[in-house]
Image (tube, rainbow, N blue to C red; front, top):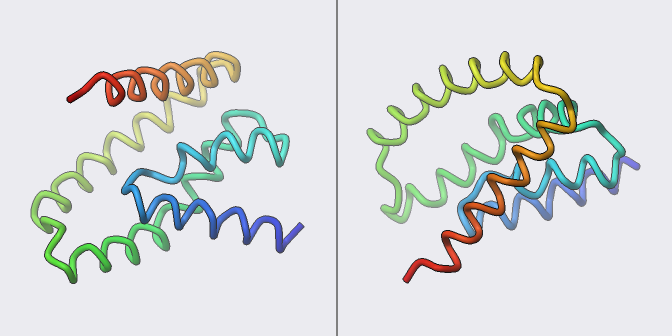
Amino acid sequence: MIWFTLLLGFAVGIISGIIGIGGGIFLVPALVWLFHMDQRKAQGTSLAALLLPVGILAFWAYYREGNADLKVGLLLALGFTLGGWLGGWGAQYIPDVMLRRIFALVLIGLGVKMLLQR
């Protein structure tokens, strides 16, 4: 189980680093399906996994090549910190099935927008 978990983290890290998205888009469904976690536990576990290691190393690779704006990133981080706290608090009061549906609708909406965008 330890090796499987490490392999999953490795795969999600590669995908996140390549396409520049939060690994939670892949990690949350994987935790629900493969680890049989409920939605809330999967989201919390994903946040724990992605907090520092993925962000700092992927950022450093982009920053070294001049492909990251540190000022904008830090301002976003401040907003993300406050918004993440509020969202995490609020998620504790949303039923599991509703959290799954919200997650799925956000992914579908973003996917459709990207497919139709020129």
